[in-house]
Length: 428
Ligand SMILES: *Cc1c(COP(=O)(O)O)cnc(C)c1O
Image (cartoon, rainbow, N blue to C red; front, side):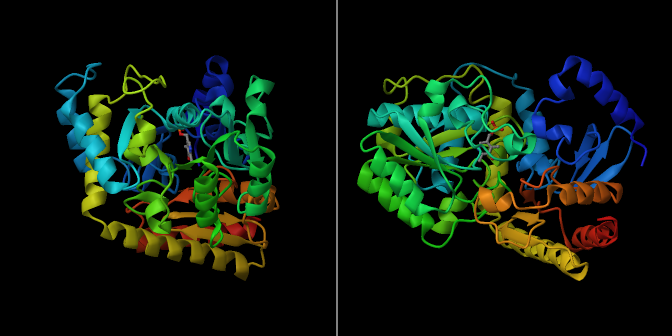
């Protein structure tokens, strides 16, 4: 495979961008090799600067659930562009967007638009703190909630991949207010709550985790957290930046039938544009300025182009709910196919899959939390990643990420990926 142009770009990028990339996991550090520079994408395919085509399972880390350059979203953006790119004043599309979100995610009664998932989670804990008058939060080891200071404690994928336990630059004071527990461990959460009576403002989690690889909650875990938070006056925040609009039109909370107090959203909600949102119970959201005293703002929040892309995306997903069954089926087939390849080759592996998210872990342990995820053979994953790339299949470049399946992955694509895996395992 000729990657000369990507290589040149990476060399140059490293001289003027830290590590040559604008988000760490893109640098391929945990899988080896150099990152590819992408020129364009369409449907299920990425095209790099050297003209190589890749069948891909990242989908921009989630947003492109309908595949790349979806014609309806493209048309909506083109139409919006003619009316200028930003107003910094209210517009009708923001009202439509808020209505759409409240309809699709019933626990959300009021919602505020922001520009990224990171902004959404940072604001959500500020609101929870303002609402409860308490300071501490609980998060789970391996869950990622963006790069806000409070969350860079046992933060999963990007951070785990680079082996930075806690980022320098996060003050001890901030770190002291973030308590962590292993995912799926109710007793550990209960112990934290008992030791910090009336001090915990919020418990934040990915209801289905994507950021230590795909990890699902054990039966009863989310229900128990809901009960505990209600009893203790703790704001339960579901970070659905990844799972929102992906696992069901109403996200993981719809699929699992649990109502959080606040929800954070991102990724799919912008249809590929930089959009995030946080929302929930009106009583809590009324704390947000200018309705209430908790400050949060954004020059480009509710941007008209971004709203057009996101609104069109959500409209399609809310109208064509059969896509969720289709995604579940194709993802099951794909994940099952890959696991079979590993079994046939005698390679220890396990798969976690739910809806259109899955991770193939190179361990035969069942992965239920960050500790068990870390038992995976990451060197083998790196080899597998590079072998697949040679075969024209672009996987997520870390063992601790979820793959995302789009509606553009059908039988032909699944066969192609499984076939590539069969060839790739010979090199492991
Ligand atoms: C991606 C992600 C974020 C951060 O969103 P950005 O838009 O990258 O800031 C937060 N939480 C979860 C669960 C995510 O997957």
